[in-house]
Image 1 (cartoon, helix red, strand yellow):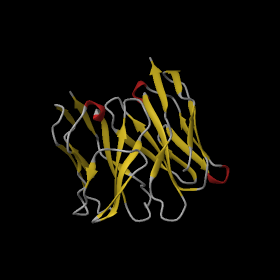
Image 2 (cartoon, each protein chain N blue to C red):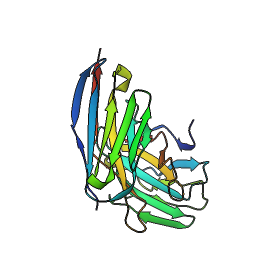
Image 3 (cartoon, rainbow over the protein chains, first blue to last red):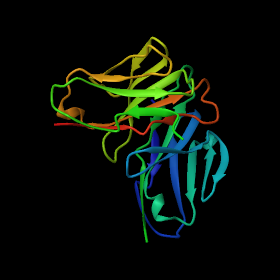
Length: 111
Length: 114
């Protein structure tokens, strides 16, 4: 099956700093999503971004499908950004709709 | 605004009990999924359904079972709970072609078997 690798696995930031999270995937995809899992375990959908660039406030994401990677940018980080960020993809093979997750990046933002 | 609902949010239950975790969505999505996640770890697909009366097992082996009698409802059942079933269970749905929203996840059920 398709492989999803995220880096770094852990990241500690001072409040106000910027960061970039990376997601590499091993095959062509027709769906890529970034999620934030908060301390209560809820998965919040940040971006649906199989290709191109999107922005939502302090967050933005870019997917370069031809090179099989996606980046999530967090600017001016806040303590509420802490949690685990997951990248997940759907392989573009026929009949495939299942979302495969990476292992996540655990972000800690300290005051 | 949640369009996919899971109950209960937390459940502590004794070994050997039968339990059903509920999942309902109001988006008319044809596809629904159950994922299992241990704390701080990646999510693993355990069951999925592409429509009414269609269910399949996912990549991670699970002793649970599911049913899909109505489009909006996808319950998960454990016939005899064991401590090894302690985990978080997340339900998700997606529409035809996933549209511009992709998957939507419920808030999860955190299960503890004592």
